Image (cartoon, rainbow, N blue to C red):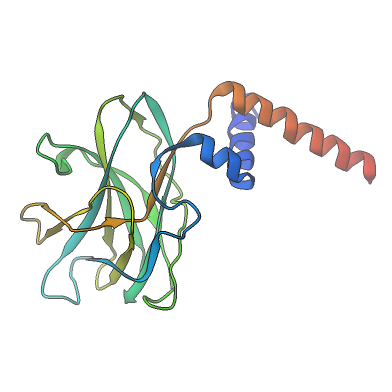
Length: 209
C-alpha cells in the first residue's frame, strides 16, 4: 500500500475509533451526544416522483472560520415512507441566504430503515468527494430522498435554522434546526501519528501470535 493510502487509512481508523478525534476535527454541527436531537419530529424531504403532492429538499447552513478540506458529514435521519436512500450534496451560499443549486457538489448517499417515532440514525455519509472549503464562506448540506420515498431530517434543539424547497421553486427558511455535523480531513501530522499507531498495534498483534 502506498504511503498516501496508509495515511488515509490511519485517519479513518483514528476518526472512527475516537470520539476525541471526531471532536477535534469538528467544523460545525449540533449532534453532540444526541441529547438535543428530537425523536419523532423533523423536516420531511422526498424524491421525484414523490408520495406527496410536492417534491421537497431540506438544507442546513454552516460557516467556516478557517480553510479546511471536508472529511466527513453526519446527519440525523429517519424513515417515513418507502426507501432507496438519502442523497447528500454540498452547495455554497448563493449570496441571499440559500443554497446555490447550480454549484452543488454530490457527496454521497446513506439510508435508514428506522421509522419516525421509533428512533433515528446518525450515519456518516460515505463521501465520494472531499471538496476544499473556504474561510468565511457559508455552505449548505442538502438532502433529498430517492424516488417515491419520504424521509425525515430529525430536528435539533440547537443550531442554525434549516431551509426547505418545494417543487424546485425557491428556498424558504424553516423554524427549527436539523441534526448535522461536518468534519475536516485530519492534518498530515495527525495522520502520520495515526500510521505509527496503527503500525505499532499491528506489530504488537504479530508478536502475540
